[in-house]
Length: 250
Length: 175
Image (cartoon, rainbow over all chains, first blue to last red; front, side, top):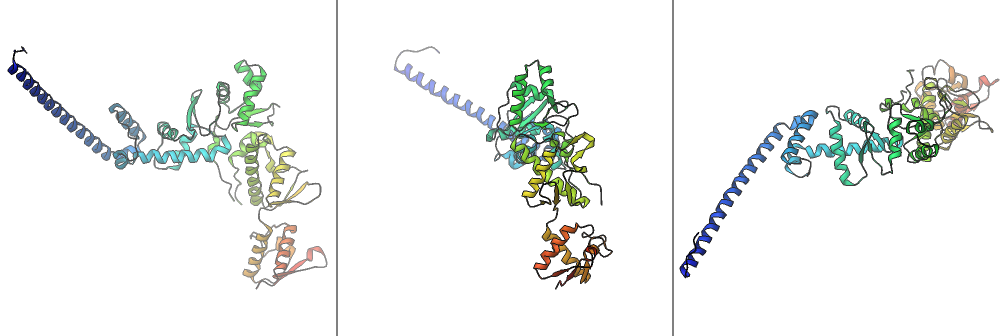
C-alpha cells in the first residue's frame, strides 16, 4: 500500500487497518467455527462408533486393542478420565478400573506364595478365569497396571529374559537379581553352583544375591534334592502348574 | 470316600524344607497345618507318630520327605492352635483333632437322640452296626471317652465300667 501524505492519508491508513482486522477476525472466526464443527462431527462419530461397538470393545480383546491403537493415533486417551464421556458411554474406564482392582486382589492373594512378584501370564490367566466370559490379554493387564502405577502402590512391570513380571511390593531388584531370575526361569530353581557357572561369578556374589532374594520372600530353599545341593526355588518364575490350586476333597 | 486331592504346594519341593525366612515359614506352616487336618479327616486318622512313617509326610512323586524337625514344628503349631495334643511326655505321639472334642460330643448326642438309643458300649459306638456308615464309625477310643465325659458334665450321659474294657459303655439321657 502506497502511503499518502496528510491527515486524510493517516485516517485512511487507520480505516484500512480496522478493515483488515475485522476481516482477519472474521476469517479466524469462520475457521474456528469450522474446527468446532469438525471436532463435533469427529466426537459424534467416535461416540457413535463407541456405542455401536461397546460390546465388542469390552468383550473382544483383539477389537479392544485395535480401538486403543485408533484412539492413540487420534491423540485420544479413552482411559484418561473416568468421568469423561468414554467412561459413560463405554464403561471402558470401568473396565480397566475393575481389572485394576482384580489385579491388586490377585497380587495380594498370591503374595505369601510368590513374595510379590508374579509372571504376567499367570496374572492374565487368573484374571481370565475370574471373568469367565471375557478374555483378558497381556495388553489389557499392562494398561490396567499403568493406571495402578499412577496411584503409587509400587506396581511395576519389568522384563526378565523373555518374560514379563509384575511387581506388587516395592523392593530392590538389581541387575544381579534379574540375571538370577533369568537363569532360574526354565526350571524354576537354581543352585549356587549353577549361578556361578552360568554367569562366571565368584561364589560370594552368587550367595549374596540369592540370600537377598530369599530375604525379599521371592525365593524358597529346597534341601531335599537327591543331588544333595541346596536349590533356590522362585515361585514367580518357572513352569507353573501351581496356578491351579486344587481344593482338598472331603 | 473319594480320592484325596492334594493342594498345589504338595508338589512344590521347597515346601518340604523348613524355610529360614520367618514370613515364608509362617505361610508354609499354615499350609501344612491345614493339609494335615484335611488329610487326617479324609482318612479318619487320629494319631501321628513321629517315630513312624506317615504317608502324608513323604511325596514320592517329587522325591521329597519332611525332616523330623519340620514334622515336629508343624505338629507343634497344630497343638498351639488347639487342634492337636501330645499323647506322651517325649512328644512323639500326637493326637490330631480335625474335629474338636466338643463337636464329637455334639454329634454323639445327636446320634443317640435321632436313633432313640439309651445304652451303648464304646466298642459298639466305634465299630458297631448302628454307627456303621455314620461319622462316628472308626472314632478314636480316647477321643470318644473324652467326648462322653463332656456329655457327662452336661448331664446327658454316664459312663459305666463293664467286666472288661470291651464292655465299657455309656448310658445316655439325651433329653
